[in-house]
Image (cartoon, rainbow, N blue to C red; front, top):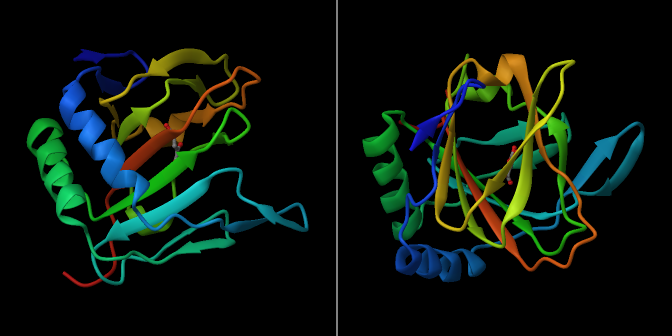
Length: 191
Ligand SMILES: O=C(O)CCC(=O)C(=O)O
């Protein structure tokens, strides 16, 4: 594990190869959806597939237009959540999945500051499948590139979301599927 100056922890081999391969197979069977987002007065498809699992009632609205309603935790996702909590020390109530089907799937510059997560959330992100470039930059500053490996865990520490933006840019290189799972806190829902 290493800690960056930017305010996150990176565990390159959080899952060993066998565990990561098994989890990747599990995630392919999750309920992926093609959601629509409203931006600049237009409705368009989100450039990736998404899914959400978590505690009952922990609905998640982002970009004021995409409402995600969690399905109950699968055993594998709940086990992974507990393992991340045991390592990183933060509690999580939902996991949002992103499936990047090719290099043309992406997520643009943003921070994760939705009020439903409470103030200064810690967000834990597992990467599976193809390696994609993850960029992070201070607001108004220059990006730093990281390569998120199969089976890795990235923990964005509390405070990071108010000072930094991050993205997975599109790439013209041929890349196969990458799955990302972001474990997040939530202040609502049923306890
Ligand atoms: O795919 C990733 O590593 C980043 C996902 C992300 O930024 C998000 O879900 O908000």
